[in-house]
Length: 245
Image (cartoon, rainbow, N blue to C red; front, top):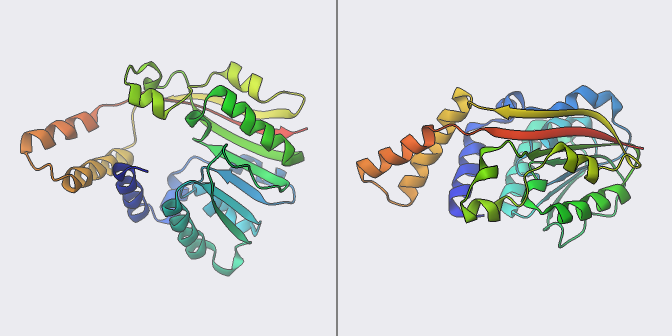
């Protein structure tokens, strides 16, 4: 994680209490809580996960995977403060997917939120193959990814293309989640054109902290960065809940 992202996630942790994070976060899985079968929950690339914090009160065993120890430590503190003694067993796994495999458990719920777009389509197929072998009939899988309608999809910046490996279409989902194994419960294709005021203010604070960290104090240069921050992007994303057949 580079320093600018570390600053962002530290600030996120300071501004977003557990209650605010859960309230502000979109959680499509709430519609299907009654569908949860017995078994542990897994999240890939969890970060500070609003999902795992919220669902920690179910008492289910949780496997949280991220390649940043920094994020896992913050998640642990969140779950402990939110759920306390009512939390199930928590496994914090600092591993890199797909170089390292998903734990050999059978999961009731697998979450891959804003995760697969960091991989090529072929790498995503390998990850889905692992998910198939670690779920059973009735297990739920939640996926959210950047779509082709995202502004970054057309970026000529090689840094953006290196960071985000793939922008998805509905056809990609159909190929990745073969109906032989997966039943689609809900699907959405969304484009957010304007950020919320809360998000805009958060990102302005982030910009300010980054400028301070890198000792950029020239008024014109700082103003240029703040003006850039005001520009809106089309944040296109696909999300889906599947149930294992």
